[in-house]
Image (cartoon, rainbow, N blue to C red; front, side, top):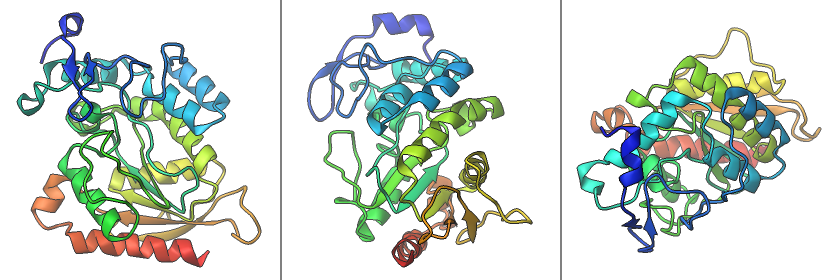
Length: 294
């Protein structure tokens, strides 16, 4: 993998769909499809900045912009940018986003889908969560079969994908080495997740947690926003379902939110048959039933 000093020598390459030229990593405000940041967007350079900026964020557009330029975790910044410069051979002629991935979907969803972190050659390349890798292919195909997406594929951030009633979010916004963010990196990123919930979670009836880490992140989120988690603490499993109480909801909603577990659509799970298309389809069918019942 190339070092940080090599980024300055990166030649601009054409976006695979639009043909517009971009350097890697992509500069904020340079025209990348879906980029809501500008050169003036406030940058979080350390954990305290994340806390301050997340708390002061008032719109989803502002949140997306601020998340996408975050530089608060030095190890993750170095990794995501080195990957963007070094590239995988199959994508050597494409620019890499090389920045944090924001949430995707409507701002008033009934279903929240929570994942772990962007893939190094998926969202870190395409600039959109769960886009450009096989995990995303598996996820969006299931959403499409359940009527929650307008197309079954997700290739890049300009492919026309639109979601219905579901918002997809990652607990950690930068691609981590070995797909394993450190505990301090998870903690640093948490205020962004809290802000996303504050701005888009009021309409959500269920959180679908993709994997054990997402399950734990969802429980931690619920506690941070003042919710009540059952005792004993619910354990993750595919199809595991628990109900938690979240403050700030209307009397009609009775303050209840469902947490639904789903195996992560990683290649390890999908190639071995641990997670099949039918199994994931059943999860989203259940999530839709919950959403419509409340």
